[in-house]
Each structure stands twice: as C-alpha cells, then as structure tokens.
Length: 98
Ligand SMILES: [Zn+2]
Image (cartoon, rainbow, N blue to C red; front, side):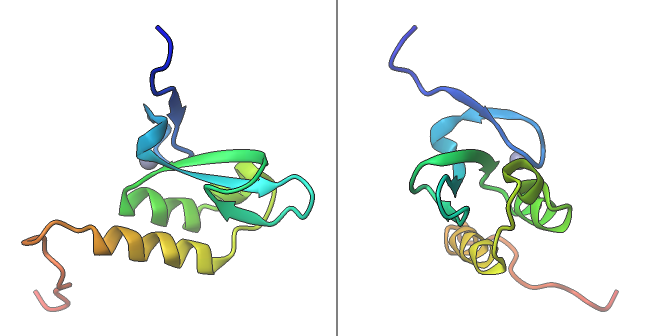
C-alpha cells in the first residue's frame, strides 16, 4: 500500500479523510504566519464543509492545533471557496421568519 492518499484528521469533526479532500493550514516555521496549502511548518487539516469551517473558527480549533492565530481573512477565503462550489439547487436563502 504505497502511493495512496494518506488519511488526515479534520480538527473540527475529528473524522479521517483522504489528504486531498482536506484543506491544509500551515503555520510557517519561521514567521508563524498561517497560510493555506503553502510552505513548511506545523500543519492542521480541515475538511471542506461549512459546518467544520464555522466550528473551527468559533471554537478556535485551528488556532489551538497550530498554536497560532488564524486570520479571519483566511476563514473568509475558505468560506468563499465553499460557497462558490455549492452545487446548483442548494438552498442559499436563510429564512428568518417562520
Ligand atoms: Zn470536518
């Protein structure tokens, strides 16, 4: 079994996923800046689900895993990626009244 896609754990839902299905957040070893899919340093993985993204931000899961602060701008970028990949027909409106 080699050359496969290694499993990594999402920091929010704690489930294992193939590496290619996750976002990798990297705290740069020198600057401690957190970048997406770039550079070298401590890594944390997050699966590409809005629930996990929001939970990770709210509960500071990535910050704790990386021991660094993840900028809001990075969360916004990930959220924008998710929303742009939303399959057509998915509900996009939030009902306030009921
Ligand atoms: Zn997850």
